[in-house]
Picture (cartoon, rainbow, N blue to C red):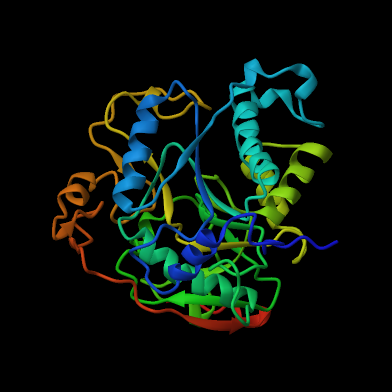
Length: 355
């Protein structure tokens, strides 16, 4: 039986949820975020991180609930996944289990779609507007026709909107969705890492153009959308069959032949990792970080971070601070995201010099 992200009956989620999802495409500011539920994975003792992401979500205009992170050292040996490499350490094991617990919850509660954050996630003050345009892009990439249940279309497993690098499927003919002159686009030299899509096709060469495409080879799971269908596939592949570190496991699934585990990503991402001012050893609960105290906070890959603008969001200020004031202007509260357009690229389109 084919399992899709469309619910089998409306009683599962309620007509209110369906109505909210429909409204999302009509008004990009006054509804939540286009998913049935929103979760943040966080260790119970990290109240500092919970405070930050809870405030960030509320001033952006959506609700979230916490899913307790897991200490790998507290897991039963009997619960260890098959083929797990113990050399990666208990913290990475706990990180894997934390993501699996959310996927399991989606399955148990028949949740049709969820947005999942790690607790150090941060995003742009214009996230809702970005996601409104991304929804159109995701449907274009899927070739959606008619009216889907989800504003993001009904034929996806994972929306990798918070990554630290990803590639596009250049081995296939594929549809891209391009958003030119995006005011929330970061300077290209500030994009983190070397996992980047091939922009050598002439159509992809704009310096202020954000892209939406079939994502493969991604890194980091700072934030992502997961459908019920995707949760079933994820738990099967990453728990019942075997397992590896969670972002590498998801990357491997996304890189399988089209139709196996379908992933859609924006580039650059919409969600980045927040690094607070102060002691750097507070950054991660998975890896040990040492060094001098950080003088100022920053967020990876985000032009106008919420965490940098919480005071202005609360006071309804007219403008928002950029992360790189020497390269970006302050952003007007009323600024919008330009409408994008779909572009079909045959696999032989690449290899031309990018501008």
